Length: 60
Image 1 (cartoon, rainbow, N blue to C red):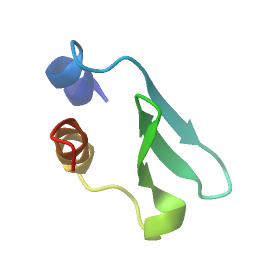
Image 2 (spheres, rainbow, N blue to C red):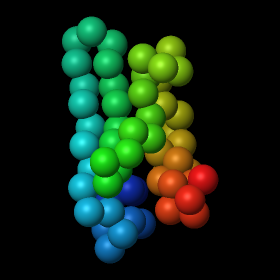
Image 3 (cartoon, rainbow, N blue to C red):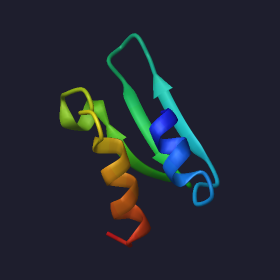
Image 4 (spheres, helix red, strand yellow):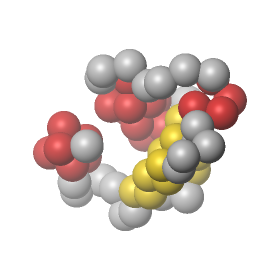
């Protein structure tokens, strides 16, 4: 999380991380879901969230 804040602090209006006991782990940036453990069936890899945010910023 610290890596995300350092790199994208000026660009991100909101970031929401939803953990739960039921296996749900979702990350939403500026209202757009960028990662869902329920959809992927796995934990997020190191550095993956940063890359996903970059992709969203480029309109991908």
